[in-house]
Picture 1: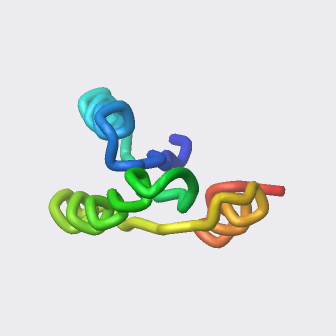
Picture 2 (picture 1 turned 120 degrees about the vertical axis):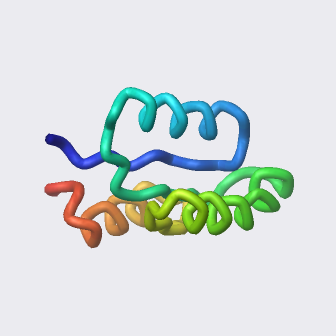
Length: 81
């Protein structure tokens, strides 16, 4: 089975994507918070830790550049360059 990472911003769309992935029986390996966007988005960072601890899925927080995201995925052995 493929590795699954859910990008979690704390908004309703990303929370629903996580819920749907879990309901489909996917094994979500990581939650990823991408530090980009306006103040409202960045204020949701606390939610990542809360959700991660509540459901037992590790969380990572990365910068908003493509290179930051790629590096985080490589470190998690989820992406092959």
